[in-house]
Length: 113
Length: 110
Image (cartoon, rainbow over all chains, first blue to last red; front, side):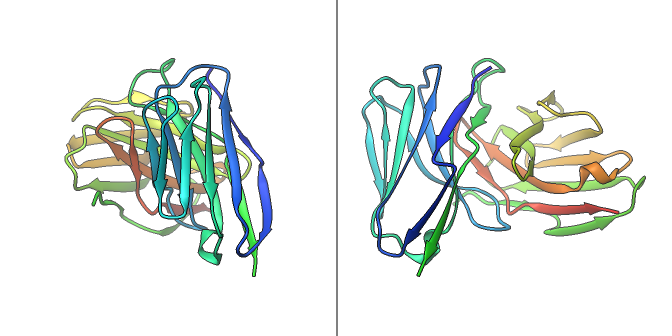
């Protein structure tokens, strides 16, 4: 079935550093979504991408829809303590039916002050 | 702003009890979903519904049932709770692909 592979699985950085993470798939996606989950909370939608090559920003966050449509990237600039959490990528699950999503396993971000 | 609420943030139940988890969304979304989240296993889809009274099994439906009598409300039912159902339960709703999640219910079955 469709799978999304996120990299890295975890990151330990200093406050103020930039962060890069990515998500890859063996199949083509026409939509990429990025979520953030704070400890003990539900995931929150950060950015949605709908077009290959699209670059979209949300504050210090920037996400890109890869040209091959098989990958997506999320960058966080000048990280701050509240960026701590787990970041998930997601895309539509066509095998099982429209409207459903397949999720990556997440990238856990830890920031040292 | 889309708002998805879940009836409880924390719940402790005994083995064999019938458990109801309620989810309500206020954006008139057609689609609603129940997931469970466990360390190392990510988000796994239990059931989803694309219309009132309609439901479809997700990846791990065993031991669960659902009810959607009204568009805004989607209930997850554990018919006879077991310890392996201790988990974080997340509800989500969507109109298209973008799913919006509730805050989660952390269920402990003892």
